[in-house]
Length: 155
DNA sequence: GCCAACGTTGGC
DNA sequence: GCCAACGTTGGC
View 1 (cartoon, rainbow, N blue to C red):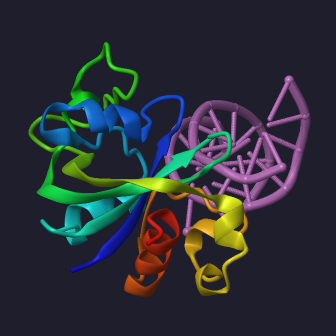
View 2: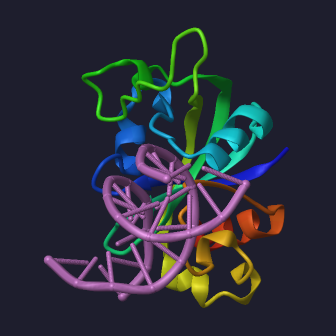
């Protein structure tokens, strides 16, 4: 099993929206970066755990945990000219962009801000915290996942 | 709203 | 295939 961190803009699709979805499940659309796409297409498997991260938030940070419940399939929002994520380069017979379905596991009782993560020695190496990081989907280690989960849901 | 960082595009 | 210009991301 792998562990991931995925960013969603806090003012666009916060974790509260996922909470309200039917079966607390949604499709993760709008990834338009090849490196992130490759992770989704090639490496994400059912049961993988994902840190749901709020970017552009007040403050930015980890809001909860979800898990992959459906593996990569074409991101249909790329085919729709009306959709903000429309990309004419992606054809139905040769889709450029992929998505997975994720289901909410838990929303954190304690929101874990990016400052909290920066101040935690065990999380220093995370790609998220490196200068200039822009990837919206990135792998993290089990240790990092467990640490964030511990900070988010204290006993 | 600013702007550093970085990915993508397109002329050559 | 290089690289300048441009667009986007995302923390601040």
